[in-house]
Image 1 (tube, rainbow over the protein chains, first blue to last red):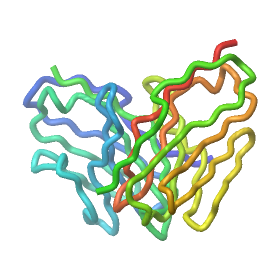
Image 2: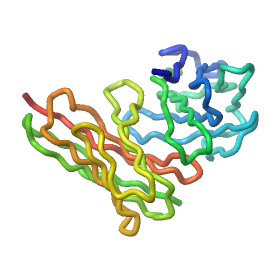
Image 3: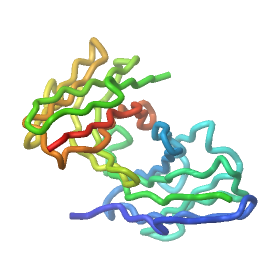
Image 4: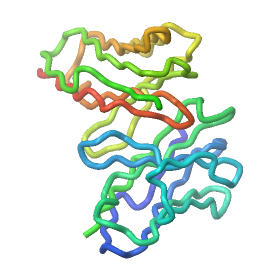
Length: 115
Length: 109
């Protein structure tokens, strides 16, 4: 069964460093998302991406964050200068057409630890 | 702004019990509602997607109901097993998925 994959599973970085989290969505899906979950808190939406552009973003997704689909399979989240409060589990998700109201499938997550 | 609430926050039951997990949402203009399972430190596994036009959706021992007008969904787990122990999350799409805080379920053998 097709699934969303994410790498790395765990990333440790120093405050101020740049990190790139990688995701491979399910191949025929057209909508891609990033969410995060700070330990003990709710899962929060960061950004959605469709047709090579951002379609929605939350107030968390500030100028430190960017997303890219560099080729036909990968979808990346870049955090330019990490802060301690960026420590969280980051989930990638994808959904088939027709849109965000279709079922979303999540990857296993990348645990980001900022020291 | 959509707010999603789940009650109870935690539940501990003996094996074999039938369970009801509750989810409420403030804006009833939803397309669907999705239930997920999350094991500790792991990702989210989609359990059921119930469309706004449906009242119920079933998968094995799981049954989800949706009452849009009252802003509620319930997840019914029949004959619970220790392997059902996990956190159960509901989420509604409102431009993006908005999640509840989850119900942490422990089923004791």
